[in-house]
Amino acid sequence: MTDATALPASADPAPAVIVRDAAEARAALAAAAALGRRVALMSPPGVSAALGPGVFAECVAAAGDHAAALDEALFDCGDAAGLAMAALRRGGLDVIVDLPDETRARIADMAVQQGRRAFARDTALAGRAVLDLAADAGATAATEARVTRFLEALPQ
Image (cartoon, rainbow, N blue to C red; front, side, top):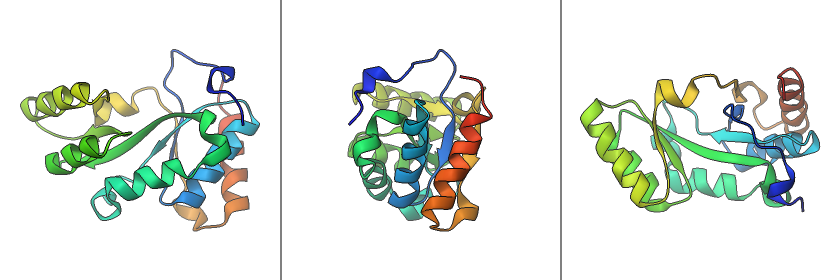
């Protein structure tokens, strides 16, 4: 297993890969690790409530030997404050919310208390390259190759 400190850190946000299951998470992190890069794993916007923070956290945890390539795990809660609170209580996830300023500030305070972060959607995505793996539908080799091409096209 690669030591997490061996992979380069950057002031720019890590590229994000939107994953729907453990196989996609493993493939994305395997491709990043093979390139010596770090990526953020992000839940798909609009379906995170159906996926749930527990399932998403388990998908991220299933990365196994490639966990060192994980920069952050972002759970997209959209406009569901309750879902954001559930994700923060679950632990291990930062949240993306699309909420009014006052509600977002309360979620952010809760996140800090849990040692996590809460981002407004525009802040979370600002300056970040994003790849959505929706088209791969479980083809692990195709997924890993797609993530490799995505990361190779980005500056380090």
